[in-house]
Amino acid sequence: MDSTFEKHMSDANDELLDEFGEQITYTPSGGQAVQIKASVSPVSIEKDEDETGRNEIKRRTVTVALADISSPAINDMVTVDGEEYVVGMIENLNSGVAELAVVSAAVESRRHEMHKRKITE
Image (cartoon, rainbow, N blue to C red; front, side, top):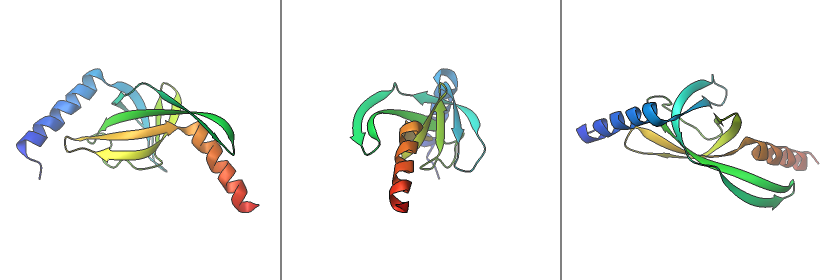
């Protein structure tokens, strides 16, 4: 059971996200997309080179209220400003929010396809 402090922090975080959050679309793997408000970090771009070639990997941190997304999961999709991201890591906090480390879905899709080709060859 949450303490009174945790309840107040959760309520405050919900209000902050409602007031100042960006509109995003959250799509659970195999589930229905929902539009919610979230705190979204600026894009961080990393350069990477692998068997698919040179890539620019776009990463962000997206903070969602657990009242909106009760069970965030790895490989769920987040759409921010029309760009799709894959949830790669989740940090649940005690204050009613979860921080999601997301990576551009385009790069992850290319890597997945390359991996599938290697397995079938």
